Length: 105
Image (cartoon, rainbow, N blue to C red):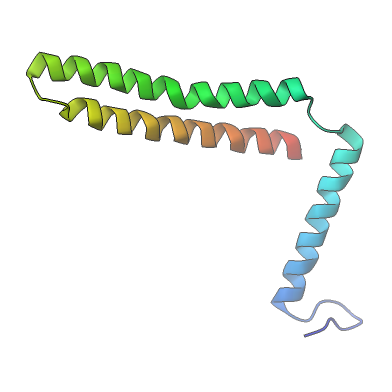
C-alpha cells in the first residue's frame, strides 16, 4: 500500500516513518557528538569481559569449595559455574543497555 497525500495509510507505513525518524535522530546525535574514542570502546570491552568472568570464577571457586567440603563430585562446581556465567551475562547486558541509553540521550 502506498501513502496517501495526507499521511501514512497503513501500519507498515507508520512503522517505516518511525524507523526513518529514529535513524535521522541517531544521525543528528552522531553529527553533534561524534563517535566514542577507541580508548573508550576498548575500556568498555574490558569492563564487559570482567563483568562476565568475575561471577563465573567466583561460582567456580565457591563450587569447588562446596564439593570438597561435602564430597559431592562436581555437582556444586558445575551448577555455580553456570549460575555465575548467567549472572555475568545478565549484568553485561544491563550495562550495554545503560550505555545505549546514555548514547541516545
